[in-house]
Length: 198
Ligand SMILES: [Zn+2]
Picture 1 (cartoon, rainbow, N blue to C red):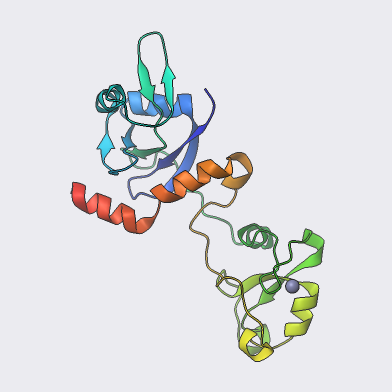
Picture 2 (tube, rainbow, N blue to C red; picture 1 turned 90 degrees about the vertical axis):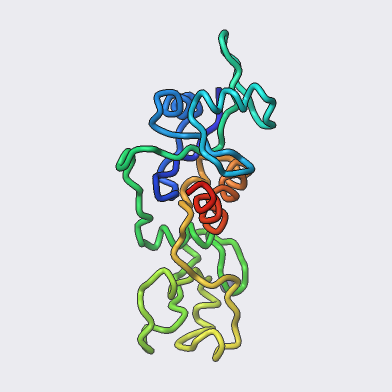
C-alpha cells in the first residue's frame, strides 16, 4: 500500500504527511476525518466506507473484509496532534523555495553558483526577509548591484514571499501527488468549504 495522505490540523493548515496505512488508522479511530475530493465535506470512517461503496472515483485498497477509497486529505479532530513545522528562514530554504533558479535570468544552477539578492538593496534599508530575498546567479547579482530591479531594468520571475506550502515535500512525494494536494489546500476553497459546513 504505497502513497501518502496529507494531514491538516483544525485550522486547515498542512501539518504532516502520513503513509496510507497510518492515515487509515487515524480515520478508523476517529482522530481524523476524510475530506471529500469534490465537495470538501468531512466524513468519519463509516461515512467514508459508505461513499466508497457508492463508487467514488479514486484509488482504492482492498482487505479481506472491506474495500475503501484512499483519501487524499484528512482533517484532524484533535488539537496539537502534530506540531506544525514552521519553515525555517535560511539560505537553504530560500534556495528550495526558488528551486535553485536565478529569479532574474531563469537559469537553474548549482548552489555554489547562486547568491541571495536583496531585492531592495541592504544599503537602501532592504531587510533579510522572505519577501526581500530572491535567488540570483552571480552575474545577475553583480549586474543589479545596489539598484532596485526597476532601476536596473531587471524583472523578477516571481514576487518573493514566505512559502505557505512546505517545500521539502517535493523530495519525498511525487509531483502528481503535490498537484492534488495543492488543490485541497487552496485557502479560498477551504474558506468556502468550511463556511458551508458551519
Ligand atoms: Zn541570473
